Image (cartoon, rainbow, N blue to C red; front, top):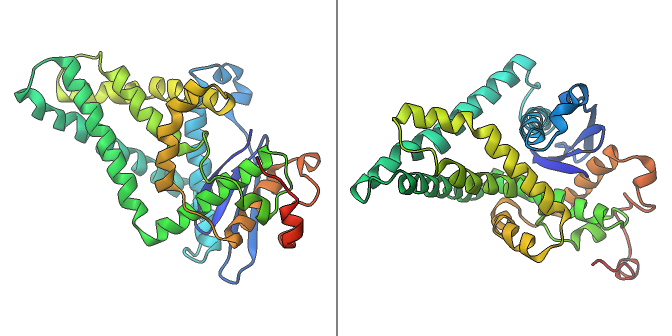
Length: 303
């Protein structure tokens, strides 16, 4: 499987052994950076086991994604230089602390307002989960209104469309890619929504201790929640079962906020990024030919 991430004026793709970040620079050229992937699970195979691989994948994706964002900011002319390893670590720690405050501390603390309704710990934990989900959805809606983020979301749509085209076995051309949906079941948006829903279920049975203990328990159980969520989305990405597809449909609907229809030039960037991580034998003949006649395009049937 391949996956990716939208960055500033570009797309990062991750294949079996490589990551590639393609960025459209201010002069209109596509700049490309390729890096080998060295997963810690290759050294410690036990980390590839179900329930463990989710947390490993999440942390590695966060690190790779931040590095790709730093590279894209430089290539797009928004930063003079890339983040150092120390600066990158500091940025990740800051992001994790901010996320913990926004999605753990605030809803956990605010749930005490429901004490006027009941003292039942199960109900209070459910209300905490509902508040967390509401904050998450409000956050996604809010950033989707920002002009710069909308452009990143267009590249997000280009990433999904390009992966769909590759999975269908068609040549990676703009015309082929643009015919596919911008929604994808293995998207990180799906994963985050599933994390929110799984956390509601897991945390509902933890009782109602002090605020400090509640926050600590949520943080300590995040690897469990991430592991369950990862297995769900991995299974959903490979299953055609109608019940499974119905279960992940809310995550697809949410992608209407986190993706936007991409421009052709954005699709070209996504194609170059994906081609860079694929073995030569997996690149279908004709891929990268961005200009096709209408008659040629009509000959290609996309499911």
